[in-house]
Structures are given as structure tokens and as C-alpha cells.
Image 1 (cartoon, helix red, strand yellow):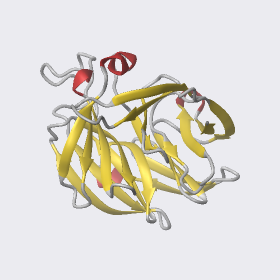
Image 2 (cartoon, helix red, strand yellow):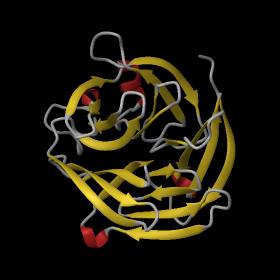
Image 3 (cartoon, helix red, strand yellow):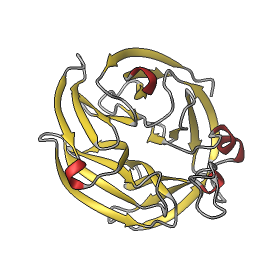
Image 4 (cartoon, one colour):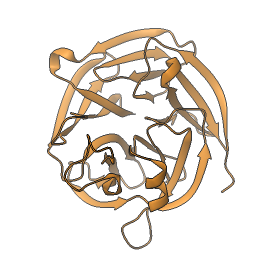
Length: 249
């Protein structure tokens, strides 16, 4: 594909450890138990949600869909792996609803996105090669992307190519967002890279299209769907608590 990324804006925020989501006017910084809402132009803090009293444990990537922020949530690093989808009203920044996946056969939920073309949800489920995080014999080769319908029924799933799993090292697939081209733009835990993948015509393994260097430190990413004439993503740099927007072309 020959794609590359160009850094556009950098915002310093109080804490940026897991992911960022974005809509027309704001971005949302997702940490383990908190979410902060920021003005997309200035980075100004608008509101803050704290999920401690709700028992939230480990929020991961999120996506804004029809005024709601859908977040992947898990009990990481505890075992057995348990997951849920937590939903927030972006206007009030209050918790709106929850969908429990319980002990999922797929692993630990790390990201979620909705595809308008297929009218399906897609979710990433992680397994880890770190001995402290493994479930029985399941290492990160068991990491999976699962398709769900709008009623949260799982329909089909795919694994990652072996060389992408190797790029995850002892960790796993931390983030994912569906681009305007219909490809999955996925991340690992640490690497400054986007792994571009597509659903295969046959079989059970995602097809690797390209690896794009990106000005982030892995973790959750989100494409800005309010921009129609360019592919602009938001991500984070944990070491410096920064939110970064960048264009892929």
C-alpha cells in the first residue's frame, strides 16, 4: 500500500494510559476507571467520569456511535478473563448501560468498533504470552477479532497472522478501528505501528495488508469519522500523557 502517517496535533492531558475515542467536537481519553472529555480544537478539559463506584476495573478502547461512547472493559490482569461493553452518554458523561460478556471463550475484550457498511460490531479479544497473564495453554496466538450483530450475537471470528502475533511480543492486540476503506487498523501494546488487515475471502486468518509507522505507543486508537476527505486517527503516548492526532495517506 505504501502508506505513511503524519503527526497533526499533540495535546497534553492529565493522564493518557489506555485509549482515546473521538467525535465531531471532542475527544475522550480512556483510562482504567476514568474517562475525560476534551475540546477537540484546544484540548481543554470539559468533563470527567470516574467509574470507581460502579466497580469498573479496566476500561480499554472506545468508539463513539450515535452520541454514545462504547468502551471495551475487562478484569485484566485477573483470571479467568471477564469482559463487558460499557456505554456512556457523551453529552452528560454519565454511564448509560452495560452489556456483560462474562467469561468469554474468546479472551479479554480490548477494543470495539461499529461498521456502517455491514451494520455489524467488531471486537478484539486478547490473549497474552506473559506467563502471569496466560489462561492454561492459550498464548497470544489465540487473540481474535469477533463479529457481532446489533443484538450482540457473535457471528464469526478471525485470528491474526503469525508475524503480527510475533510483533505483539508477550502482549497482544490492544486497539482497533475500521477505516473508510473497510480495513481494520490494529495496534499492539507498545509499538508505534498500525497493522492494516482485512477479512479474508476464505479461511480464518485476517489478511495483512500493510504495517504503517505511527506517532503513538500502541494502545487504543480511533479514526475521526467527522473528517470525510482524509483518514485522521487519534492515539496516545503513555510515557508523556499525550493525545496525538495523525493522518494516514
